[in-house]
Image 1: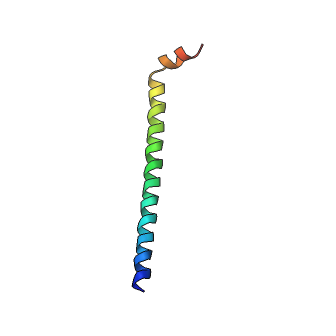
Image 2: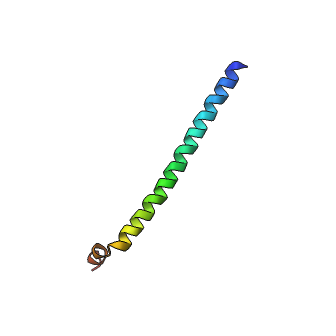
Image 3: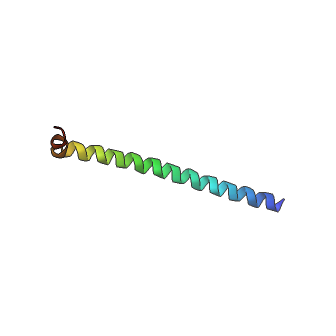
Length: 52
């Protein structure tokens, strides 16, 4: 019984860690996307130069 509870706790910790990593990746990806959009909106010069 002790081994079952130990393995269950390990699986729970691993699943929580994976969920936390995915959440952080999604949050920082959205933040990075907003930063790119703001940067492009504030500096239209290279964008207009790249358009022929």
